[in-house]
Image (cartoon, rainbow, N blue to C red; front, side, top):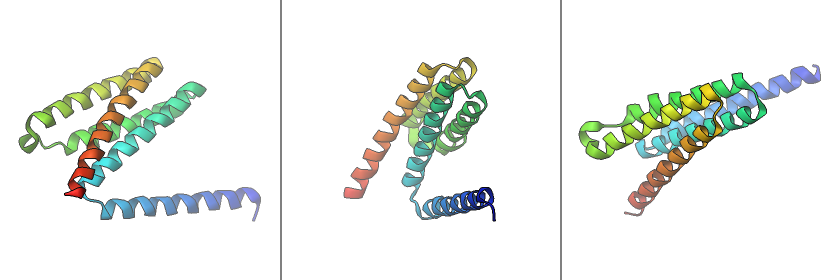
Length: 139
């Protein structure tokens, strides 16, 4: 086996192992932990997008921003329960809509400031969400 094939096989194996770890984490996570995982995924995608934006790699930047948009819109926003969540859910929906617009602007205009603002807003919200989880866990 050549070194290239060996590295490719290792990469596929490592990827499969990581996927199993993520799937196991999702299967055993509470609803609160699932939201934390969504925040973590969106923030990781934004950090990746920033790296590609700074490197001038538009295609990969676009993929990373698309991933962040998908998590925000089809994960965080879709998880909101506006009936039970009331005003808080409505405010979060507005925040996620604003983050979406920031991400779209960052992608369209290669605007690092919009990307950083989206990251800050999601990071602050994620931090508050984690704090809520800590309080619930303590009882």
